[in-house]
Image 1 (cartoon, rainbow, N blue to C red):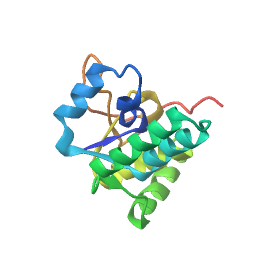
Image 2 (cartoon, rainbow, N blue to C red):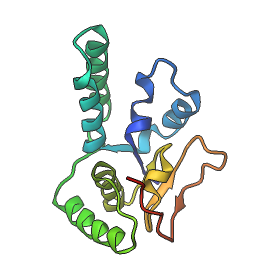
Image 3 (spheres, rainbow, N blue to C red):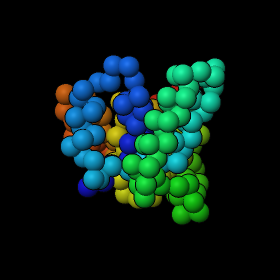
Amino acid sequence: MGWLVDTDLLSERARKRPDPRVLEWLEAHAGDVYTSSHAIGEIQAGIAFLPDGAKKRALQSWLSRLMDAMEGRVLNFNTSVATVWGRQEAEFKRKGCPMPMPDSFIAATARRHNLTLVTRNVADYTRPGLKVLNPVADDPSPSSSSSPAPAPKP
């Protein structure tokens, strides 16, 4: 089984007080963990927004090391993912459960590569046909929603 790690978990090691349950899960699944280029972009945007200084330099260095460690396991948004994304967008809109753009790109990447999306933000991704796992939940078994989630509130 493979896992696509969302931005919230990918950035856990950079926190001042990382959740040991997340770190344990990441270590236990290290060989099967992937992420998306969009998650990397979200992290880079957060770093770029910081004022110049030691914290920004440290996080930029951490991100560079992370990308080196994830070499070959950062999945890009290419034409095959774009095709899945387009179909997914139409499906979710028809069912009344559209998804914000960055999340929908990450979801399409997981669907295209038949990976379970791992995140603590399960509510953001509960959609038909998308396997989602919260590794710190009481029951950390992947779920796949069979009914549409309510549309996110504006």
